Length: 352
Image 1: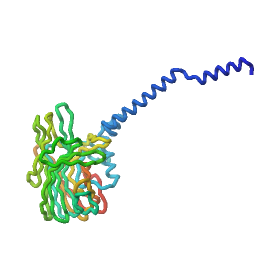
Image 2 (image 1 turned 90 degrees about the vertical axis):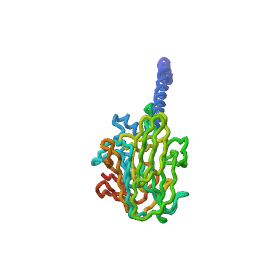
Image 3 (image 1 turned 180 degrees about the vertical axis):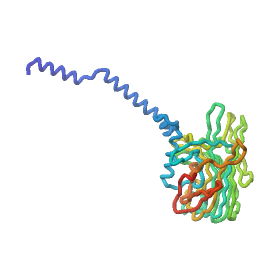
Image 4 (image 1 turned 45 degrees about the vertical axis):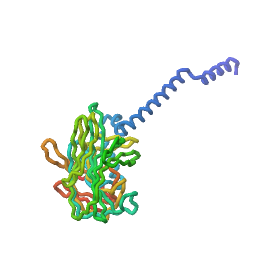
């Protein structure tokens, strides 16, 4: 090779080894963009949740993505709180149609002909023959600055089915710490990786005989500048009331809605459902019902005509609580009533 040709190749080789200054800057720029996308993604995940992210990416409202939560419960086939649950969605041949119900009063009726439950290894402090019937609703408080606070309100009947005694446990659950439960007992429980704070009014044991009729009710009244008072009744008897203090309160309602989910933290969400369900006695117990023959009905007060009406649709389970039933099925029996009975496995489905 001639000397001048060697010189040309040496120059070309050197140029190949050298990177244009803009290439380094471009690499830095794209790295910064990537870090930015990751940061924004993490922020959105922990603020609006995966459903909100899907809504942004697709341009569809979040209600289009409530269905996967329900489908996941059904397809999982695991024990769930079982009875009737209103989630604010119709299932029209697989098409999800959302709706909302806002009310200040909810009523659940139960007629129990047989009940016996058994769990060989119950949680500490829970009876092996324990069970519960729970009326659960989501309380949404809107403040003057349009911020919201969410609480789970529970009217609970606990059973010791071998001893034929029951007791009442009005409960308020929050995903933030209560400053005070007043005369009620305070407790905490970790569910789905998130700490829940409880205020509970413990009740005394009451003997019962079968058949047994129970009417569980929840009501709320707003005191501007003070907060919202929750009332609990069973068979017309006033069990007591609880004041959720909020001097910035603007409005409050029991909300059933298929339009959105509630982010409770740690990537977990809760649904705005209202439910009347059977499950374990407490502390997240899953129990097996050797026998259960009961009928349930769930209604809300319609402020338009001031009368109780049934929720527009139901599934055979709830999603608010950790107390579950291993083997209950539900079927409609007419006039707004649903039969709940023991079977061999959970019967999780859309009812009507």
